[in-house]
Image (cartoon, rainbow, N blue to C red; front, side, top):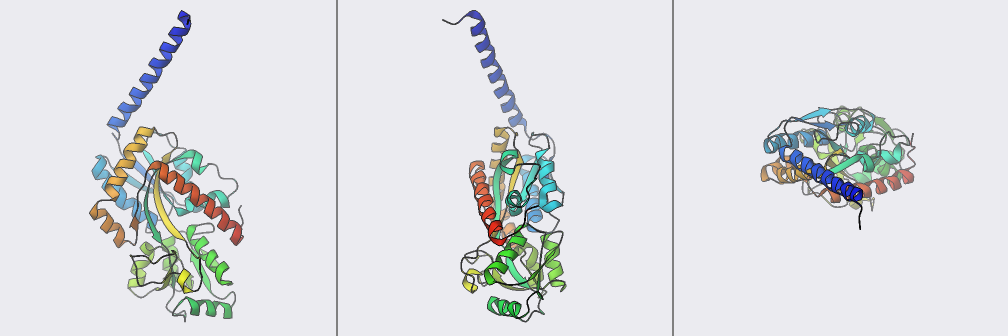
Length: 327
């Protein structure tokens, strides 16, 4: 039989739990009651930024509060991630993260955060291929001719990316590895910048997203040769894959997803997940994202967490295979 003191202890414990749950549920019911900040770690104009701005606009309409995109560039996206991780876990600071988020843990040995521990996945937003494009002055009509040209002139051709360790960088390094090429890497501040530099003739090759490259391809300033996914994309069905162009097994794709600081209450994460799934899958949003060369794709927080874990493992294997050095 319990003593009176023990009974009081358990009674107070139950009351405390009930109060905490009630407060949490009340917070979720009124959330959001002020503007939400959506951090983007890459420069304006790239696929991550475009996705963020499209989603933010629709979330503003759906949630009834302004969702404001804030670009915090630098360190391959780490600056934005650090700011998100250190923000109050109240649901008012979110992170729109690109594929490179799952590369950084394997590339940098002293990150001040742990992606899986310190961030709470909300939902995947879009996926999409990268495109191997060349400057029109490069005398190659297809991947086979480009490989032959690069092999005949070791170290002469160059490719641009948005920095060492980025998703575009790994796409280029995997191409070099599988084709056995000596091509010089030139880093830029973002994927859009590297595509623009490619169009200006500063580099010969780049691996931008369809978002970054479509306007330049449409005006003839860049020549597309292949997509990086294992299957052709419905967004550009005439483009062959690198896999079918002589590099069997080549497969790299981009993605963008929404996360929050890890301690954000689960019911707010659920609320945000429902909102993202709702707005991303509307016909008008699908059409808008497709026009940008992106394929809308949402999932549950648990599914997105498992997706990120798989991406981290795959990137770790690729980094080891390509010999990219961690800092």
